[in-house]
Image (cartoon, rainbow, N blue to C red; front, top):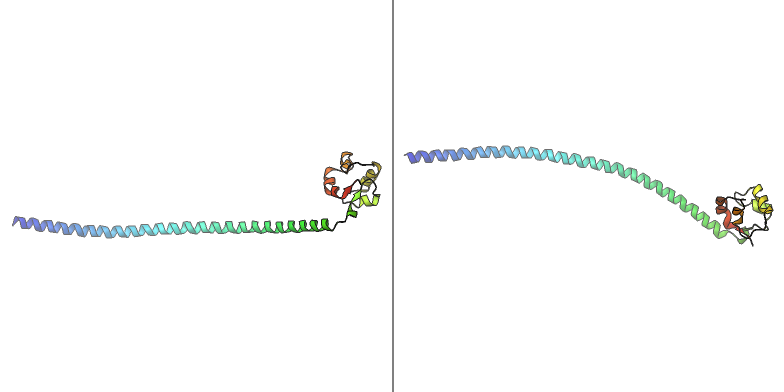
Amino acid sequence: MNYRVEKRSCFAFVVTLLVGLAGCNSRSNATRAQSQEVKDEKTREHVANATAKVKEESRVAAQHIDEAARQAGHEIKVAAQGAKEGWNRKESDTVNVNSASKEQLEALPGLSASQSDQVIDARPYSSTHDLVARGIISQSEYDRIGNRLTTR
């Protein structure tokens, strides 16, 4: 009989233990589910914030690209105008600094009446760059009109 009591007690203990574990397991599953929901919410929030930041940065980048495209378009137009002007320019558009009249010299962009007189008074020139060397025009002025000057 003693064996039967021990067997029943052992059986009761095992059943109680299993029921207790099952209860702990269901509580543990509920805790895990809540924990996963919190993690999921944090992930959603993090991704939403990152997406909003990228969206704003993309908008700003698009504005910069648009402005750069406008500027490039303008520069292309100006370059095309310069190419057209150069293509259509005749040899007669060059000015011989050794023989040009005051009016022809003054027709050069940026050359003043006083500078035209100085060019005439300082003749002859062996090179168009002599205008800079003799202090009649600056290097920047020469850079602007030098391709339209000749000494022959």
